[in-house]
Length: 89
Image (cartoon, rainbow, N blue to C red; front, side, top):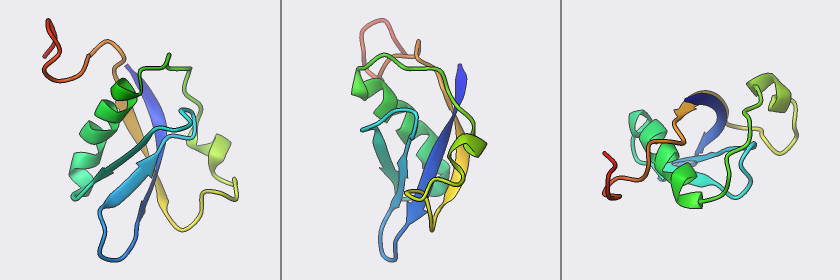
């Protein structure tokens, strides 16, 4: 398992949105903040691309494209498989 920085935002009257700067094109969302890590794991696995090594939040903190939200670290298990996948949890 690896910890990846997830940039999170929430617009008024919307779900929480999140993206992984280390994984371009991987976005996730959840109505409850507590559900975001699970949804993020599913989004990474559904992406189907090789998962690169994680960077740190500090690596991205001053990037102009990430403003107005907040950061969290999300544990990603590349070996977990997607729910319902044969032979997986």
